[in-house]
Length: 131
Image (spheres, rainbow, N blue to C red):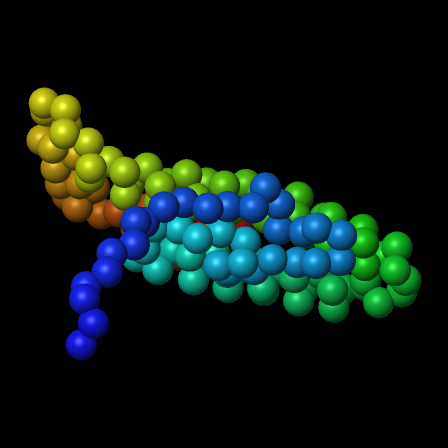
């Protein structure tokens, strides 16, 4: 048994999913705080759209592939950056120790729990992303 080790959790994200003909998906594109598996959800949505876009017509030429990949990066950006921002905010908010923040955070979570339509909308957004 070796000594315990710790690794700081942190956010690392590439500016774009696409660099030329290289497409980064999942942890190759971003490492998120492990908040409810959102990194996996994001990677699955990236992979789904990549396959969908390539199947839809990028076969024709190198220029078609390049155009498709640029379009993929543009299409995925809103969902990707909203999830990155939300998970980073949620994880960091639990480390803030200013007076009253714990109570405010608790009230916000309780309100979300008490209002099922908002809870469903939030859960749906986190599972399925921007549509």
